[in-house]
Length: 219
Image 1: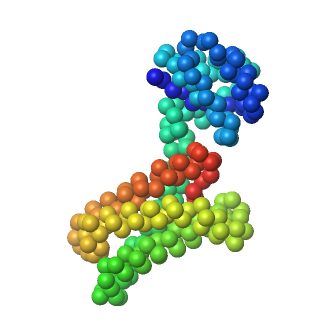
Image 2: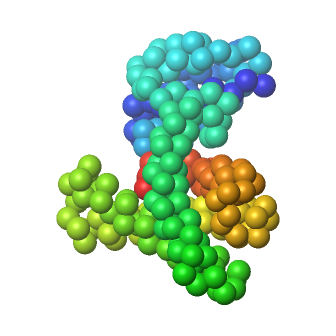
Image 3: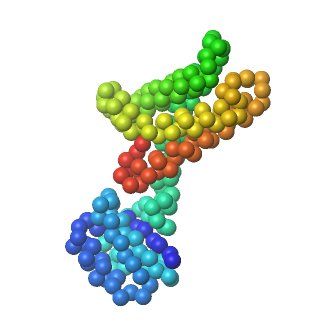
């Protein structure tokens, strides 16, 4: 059954009651759900022959407006949010990669006897530090935060995402290369690409969820 979700300018129970009175008895619409906790308020309609155009028509007929950022198919189908989440995740991936792979290269060049456990542990820590540092600089320059506020925000908004990314990257790298950085071996570069892809995919759903559910960027 088609499900259409639209962002609207409804804002209270009275608005919800008004919309439900307009859609009541309409054959095209079998169910109307109004999420007053979201901002902007989302209206989800279901019906066998329901289209986005018809859903917009009945919302407008009730006296309300439909906002940009319409989603179809439910919570996970907002393409605008996926684009924003992807951009945020790429920012994090860049920051994590600098510290992560930099630490692995450093350890293998100057401390080759370091155990795999400590290589991965130190690489994850280094990746978290560089990712938070990069996001702090971006918040300072792009959002005009103070340095302390930028640091607190970067840490608080990004930590879970970054930990998931680091674990995915290092696990993938270890499974392919055993965490050995041999630049002359084509397998190393293939492993690097695979690790970056895994690091991007792993936290992406979480970042989308945070944006769509709470309108809160993770980075």
